[in-house]
Length: 413
Image (cartoon, rainbow, N blue to C red):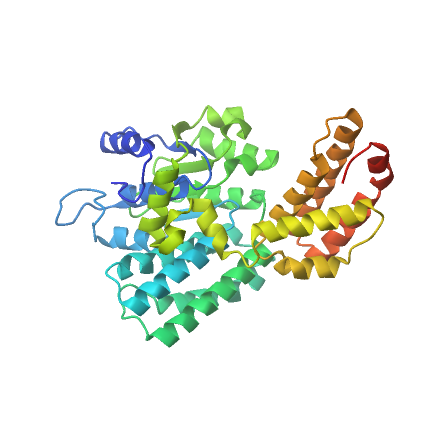
């Protein structure tokens, strides 16, 4: 059990609770980003649905090939729902490169990275299950994209032979393009309340085979109305359901929810441990194998974070000297802020410029306003689907409104 969860003591606690039938119906996996919480949640789902009918005669064995485990390894088990905001793009790109390289080299770990790529894509598409989106007016628009991804993913089915190198690369490229469309157009920044209500109805339907699992990532980012809706389910959870929440900020989770879940804590892996994860999971080579997890994933950004922050610094300084940068030029310079993680880096760069090295009361008040402007800009794009160009143009107007006060505060640019 939990062979793919590296360097987390929580795996031992979970193993004991599962083997002794002590796992409660609702748990919280809490810890820093990239610490393996989602990997753990998906592994719990596999173990709980395993039939135990394998040559090892052991439920949840890592190499079990029972029908349920096969589906869970491909993330195609209909008894598992996955929801919550997540940027999957960098993981998909990293997995794609590992998969294609292993295919070209006919590496011994080809099967492992084949599953790695399949699972990285499914971590995105599972969030767009018809169960969660039924009745939503966006479903008719996202359905064709999902269908196109599924059609191409079928060609990568582990039960089938892989296409030749050129065809395989084309298939992977098409999948990535459609995943980008799905993320850019439909990924939410906060879980919609209607999805909790639909999941509640699904949870109360009797399962015909094993436990049903509902995984919610980044639970701390739920709005109050969504938290309250979830709380109603957790108060009287169905017997054959397990709710798995993850968070990187336990303190931001509603206390009444915390009182109804058992928390398993994840720790920050050491630098050597993170490097080993990069090597074992993504099979990085050369200098790349010595990178930490997040640093490695950021290699797949279309623009380097340092360049994004440089653009943010220039943009902010121009505004504070009375010049108005062209929003279209900024968007182009920052690769249209795709993936949206680039927008977060850009806005963080602005805040770093604003905070500078002054601690004056006047500066603090202005910085608070700038934080609000940046938050509005981010939400405009990620929540309300405003184009990045329009959002940056609005941000420019907002930031220009504090230019005079900024100059009077004695800020040094």
